[in-house]
Image 1 (tube, rainbow, N blue to C red):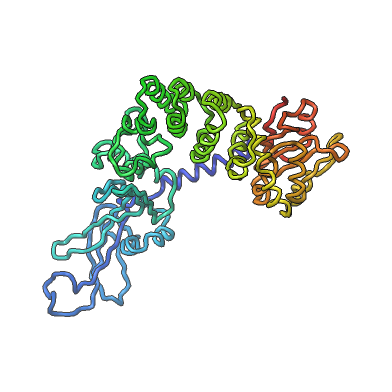
Image 2 (image 1 turned 60 degrees about the vertical axis):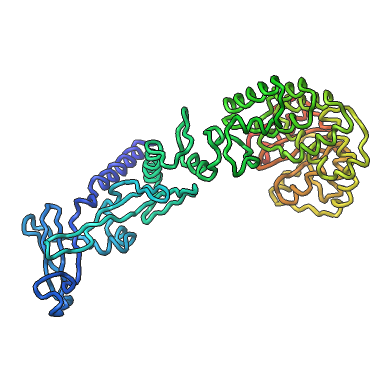
Length: 496
């Protein structure tokens, strides 16, 4: 940055601060409020209709005066104490605050924050304005007007309302008032955190789920099974453990629960439920519960799909063999897509899988390939005629890269042909390609497909050769050069 730019920036900031400092606070601004004189209690009240107006003036110096005038007469007043002639229209500010703010940006309308309790809690930014005149008592009556409001209902619904421009500092102040009030009074009688900062989301969660009696439920991923009954953590853990009585299982489950909260700040119960329900050997159950799965597997695994897969595997394999499969899954590093592909292939055509399945070694790769074999006929029948369309930027990457020719499949039939050559589940990505959620390129030598690359959101998510084997260092280097040439993103795959 040049010296001139620094000076210009400093000057701009100085002007901004000056304008901010020059603002008149709402409370110290000179105001004028107007009311019909005939509505005031005076000597001729109710006896004579004057059609007069009464103007009440409150000056910044503290002077207060009233002026009675005909409604056709122009308002004109100067403070006798300080001579000020400029007074702001309080009626306009009260009834049309946005328009008033646009006309008078010099007035700081962010005056005061307060809490309003009732059916829920409201945190409000309010301004105090003269709103009426009591001529008989020689008083100007003031009232508060809410310009910003953040409320949370007794049912946990959060609502924001802003009459003026909203910014993060306003929201933070409104939020702070709500949180401070809940922490101090806890009128909702909610479970409160001991070692964490309270948030609006937490308050909303427990207001919507009154039956959760302990704070740690906020971190549970799946709470559907606990609807409409008061429940504690101890009861919930017993339920997701299918009420297994073995001490070793109880200990393993509770330790798993503590570890997940510690390491992921979340608790996923799906595998505990599945393992304690599908496996009878308590030693195997403990071993499975002690596994630590990746965040992606915990977050994206569909419980119903795994439930059906386990039911199927138990027909063909022993509990120990299935246990070894999940040990392998738990040790997956950056290749979770292979695990999800296996499940997707099984779910895609279960009837075909059950009919044509041939028992293979119970590991991730062999089951993955066997499920593909069982479902491939159905995929071919439904996918062959699907035409694939691409953007110009996609086609631009179809070039010569070293000894490789890079291509895109033209239709489902060609994608199926590629999948057959590489013996993988590439055809299963057809719908995602059509929906532009992914794109697959093939690298050819003399019209022979050597490996494929999948790109999602401008990033390579997987690249493999036949039977999903990794690329060689040379192949990976070629792919990196091609990728950097056509996609302005850092490649995610390292050399094998």
